[in-house]
Length: 66
Image (cartoon, rainbow, N blue to C red; front, top):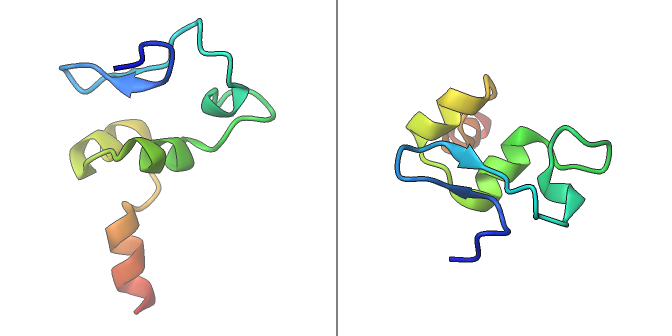
């Protein structure tokens, strides 16, 4: 695993290393992705998703739009 890219640790905590030079991974920066985009990119499960955002989990959004 590349420890300079965002990842989830064994407890499900989102880790964005200080050494991560790609500011798109830093949701708090102007050029950063939204938390939802970041969680989607990282493949967050439903439980982890709920821990970090109030937005609907992607599969729920897909079901509602069908």
